[in-house]
Length: 72
Image 1: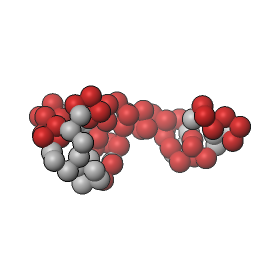
Image 2 (image 1 turned 45 degrees about the vertical axis):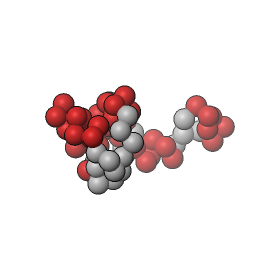
Image 3 (image 1 turned 60 degrees about the vertical axis):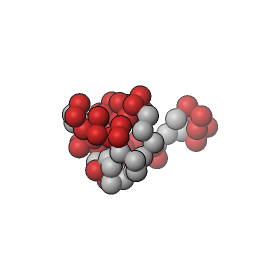
């Protein structure tokens, strides 16, 4: 998965082109589910935006209230 998705670099994953989406759907190293692949750019943008708002995505996760673990 990491190699197929550029080591999970959110900036790179956010800019997946339609041709790259098609290639990923044929990539035998990963589960080739088009809907799951199409969510990658959207999730990457969410991670980037959350990181900007919270001084890092790790900080966002770390600051999440323990009593609301399910809400995470």
